[in-house]
Length: 130
Image 1 (cartoon, helix red, strand yellow):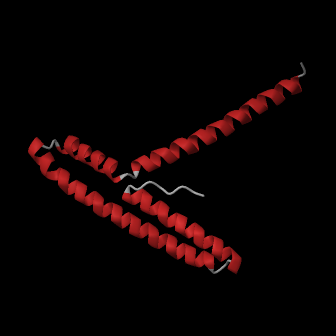
Image 2 (tube, helix red, strand yellow):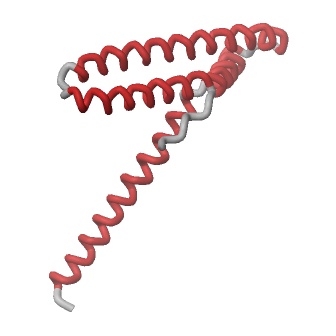
Image 3 (spheres, rainbow, N blue to C red):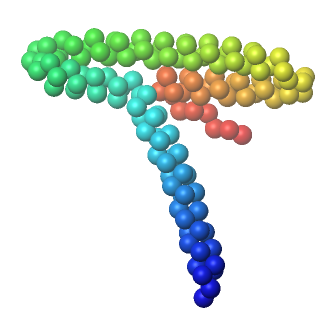
């Protein structure tokens, strides 16, 4: 076998590894971010951090738990509102650049965005795309 064939095979193998690694990293990263942004998970981590770093007593931990839960509810509502506002402003600017036909399709995309935001911050299942 010629040296250039070996080099070609090794390059193809390397490229396949790079593509596979990129796809796996994107998939795992997306799942990790969605898990991290769940208010219940955030509350649990925060509670655990406070318990371990401050050496909270059982009584303190019980009193702090509802405070953290309430805070996470506020956090979720704030994130939903801020994300919605940012997307709304962005979408309004994008709409200025679109043709009338594109605006019709873009309105559908906006509805999907809004449904996705509600599903992420209200623990609803995201709607299925047609």
